[in-house]
Length: 204
Image (cartoon, rainbow, N blue to C red; front, side, top):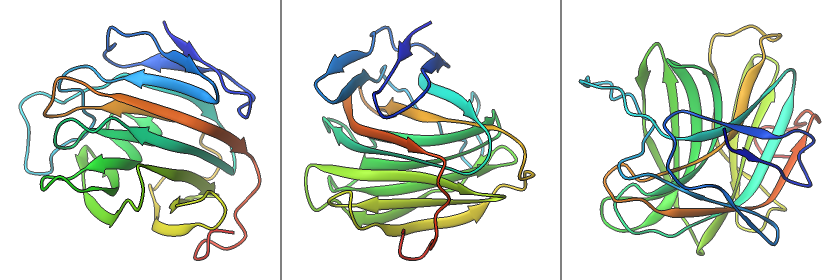
């Protein structure tokens, strides 16, 4: 089992899912994760024969939280992405991604999976080669935000998963390459907080 740690996170993240075959690589302010070929975590609402899988690095947390990181992706193939994830079980999770779209534009993408089916929502193009991403919990609600600088945040999504306030979930990160032979994602400036968001709309 692989483990990653960050100075700004008070617990280790442990690997789950199909291993990529590449150990995490420490960098100056974070870690690089390598996606396996065709690694993905998306349950097509139109149906699928075999549920896809991807190695993810997770830790269980309770109560309100914020997890943020600056995510940089070596975009090689369509849908290559670096992801922050909240994971309840094999049929319930959410993601915010820095992802390469089918026309070659890197953009923010969000996915919410409920009852074994994922949705998929394309957001704004990335203004630079990386994006600051953040996932947050506010009781029974969750919020996804993005930022160019890591200082002011833009709301991407606000939703519920139908789970009680006191149910722990796992949070963390992964690298994906659904159509490609793999890619490398760098997660830097990773920070965790139990502070509750004061304003979901403006991200403060």
